[in-house]
Image (cartoon, rainbow, N blue to C red; front, side, top):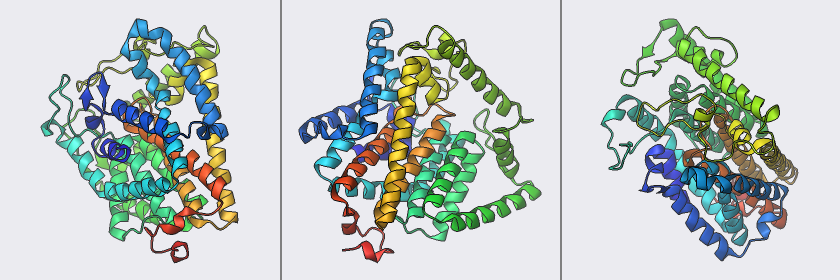
Length: 438
């Protein structure tokens, strides 16, 4: 059920997120099933045998304290806003299930590999439908008229980064056509999402460095740069005319988007979006670090955009904006300095644990384990970077993916520490490494 939900979120995006009986949706039903599986596993204490697990439990406890008092005031919105952290229960569920039966780690990794392999070509088509012909896509028969297929560019970029990371570590054997489609897909995303583009490039470069495959990535990047230079010189362009505010697919637009991350841009919509975020983030820092919300934040349930003076109605019928397009700022504004401190301790401890696992796996020549930890680390890195520029972890589309991967990484660490030898030896999904096929 979890793998099915992850696939649905990847391919359908917000379209699948609204499946359910409001105010309970698909993510909540999967979470309930997961909690039942967690209780049946009997591995309740084993999930707390790592430092990141203990920090996550502390963070969940703090967020619960910051949420419960606001349920009477804001109702279900308090619970809805808290999922940015409370979806962390998925991590404990994954840890328990993997520890109970380590072979599940193989099953879910193989499922993710198959999912991401076919996601690459389909994602380009799905995004094209969403952006070009989105008005004609079938909508759910519920209030709000939400479309069945509605995938955001940042989400696609993250999953393309996961697919590329799998190929880099050797868990997928891909053809040149697949690589071309991947490059075309990220070029399409690069015209629409600066955060998504940065997330993809950072994750791929990290995976290449950790796997000593920088030369391969450089050759692909050089070929892409050459193609983009030619397109720039010829001023090739494909206009997205169906949705207001869409940017054209062109080399000039990609260059404009990337340079606007660091410097001012002549394009008003690029600079306006950036300045709007920076002002809001500055206000959040002021009323937490230097204001009355240092310890507790504003809590969960209050609409931050309305409370902070940045309210804006959605133009496509979606719920109004509630979060400041940055998961770290969301945690700071709602949970205060203690919440932000626990959040960064969790991220840093998890990342250091992954780096340690990669180092030990390389020393012991456990190539499959090293590839596994590199894949998970790169994938999580892509999500975190995208969540630093967009509303990502605040919803189930990437929130459940993020906490699932965090749990897979911790569960894999416990298994590797306990057994010392790679159970990936029984997995021949990548026949190029025969020494691992036993």
